[in-house]
Image (tube, rainbow, N blue to C red; front, top):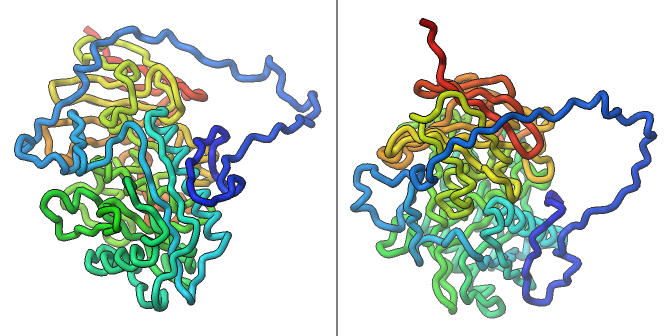
Length: 481
């Protein structure tokens, strides 16, 4: 089970044995290494420290307000990127506090759910809860409500089969509503949907996919199905669907297909559930840019490298984080964790940035304010084998580094609203350890030690990458007389 040692405990009602879903605990293992094999203190590389700048202005000055065209006429349930936080019940889920999520099991007579399938999904639920606790800096928690049996759907699984790598039929709202209505019809008698914010349906793990995306075995749904509360309030969207239970209608729901049933932590169900929940908060994903075309080989991810920002932008991002900017808008970062600096005051400064996901830390992002609506965000990323996509590149440090992107809140959402700086341009980078096919191709958005970027009249140089904290230098080039 790919979870951290300090797991967030799941609150699971119904007759469910605690041993089936309790968090993993760390095992104390005796160290058997011979002391002679350990490196001596003299040979260890010393930690590098720098004189960190105390240059700072009020963080409120970096809360860039939405001044994009048409902002004042926007509906509050539309996706947003900038301040203010536009979440408005019942259109979007609040991002601070606690969510009640249902995990409801469904199967067919000719595809029965197993104890192993149930265990897989419980592990996924545990991972999702722990991830939200961590990424929100312990400001958001998940309470799971788990069905104690499999709801038997009528007919054969073949009656519902649809979707493929080349098809988007899983977005069909009419067919999706039929799935939801059948699911409710076989579960409503024994499962209480009262006060549920988000329903996750789980089907038996079905079939497999090759690296090329070819279906093998009994694949019911190729990728996954989902729907959002914002689609049904107040004027129904053409894509509107809802879980219509006796206790009320629930617009937020998801069902992971074979693409997100991976057991090697490359594309597990929890990242799909979590990504879709990001939309339920109301955050725009920044991908793809308007006019971007996907040529079938992941083109949309190459056209907008902001997909490296985190799970809400791209659920196959190797480092499962959320951009510091989105986290601040969400209320997950305190104002004093965002180091705001006025560009006019900078000459030659060093700033320390803490690991974006690690709970705690004084500075989760540095923002260089260049105008009323513009600035550059600087944040730290560290690949973690317990959370992130397993990858040799990750183990080698390829995904560790500084992530930088600029903001212009006068631009329409997803129209150059958040754009990253790139250390090596937008050339295609391959990581064959990632899966499925579209995930293997991306761009290198991480700045490593010694690498630098130019932004306006500044140079930003990565001085040192260390465990939990990185150091960057921001300076203006000096000109000789």
